[in-house]
Amino acid sequence: MVGKNLKTILEAAIKIEEQSYMLYRMAQGKVKYASSKKFLEELAQEEVKHKEKLMAILENKKKLSELGLLVNKIQDLKIVDVMKDTSISEDVDYQRILVYAAKREKVTYDYYKSLALGLEGTEVGGLFSRLAQEELSHKNKLELEYDEYILKEN
Ligand SMILES: [Fe+2]
Ligand SMILES: [Fe+2]
Image (cartoon, rainbow, N blue to C red; front, side, top):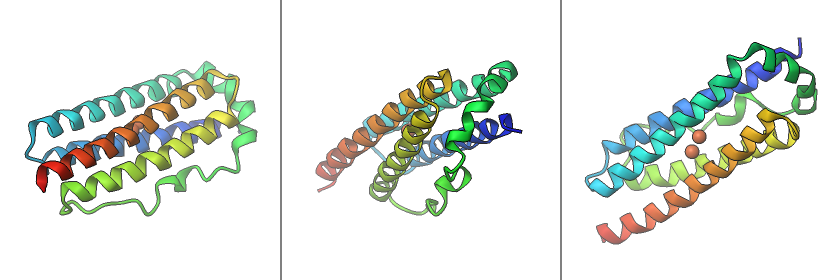
């Protein structure tokens, strides 16, 4: 059943968003600067919004079945394995978390970008395209935060 593949894709993306949210929440406990805590909170809230947008499509059964046929194009993507080997232990410092998170945002960007291409011309494709751009902006913001943090600490 083809509709099932899109469901799998959406569920994997929702999982990515949940993990991103938890990462930024965890990082809040690692940093003493109020500006950094605020920055992390903003990122966490954006990941929540991403999850909500994905959930809305997942819950729309009619939309899912309409899109099911298009998913053949993206079947070769390694859907579930996308975030393999990217776990981080909770005892790392903020600096390491920022590097890890920036890399993770890049991986997410690449993944969403490929989904957007595979689903081009559909509403879900458009959503993944917008999400990809936002993940890329998260990566850029994390790199700026890294630079600012290093300046404050040294
Ligand atoms: Fe996200
Ligand atoms: Fe993100």
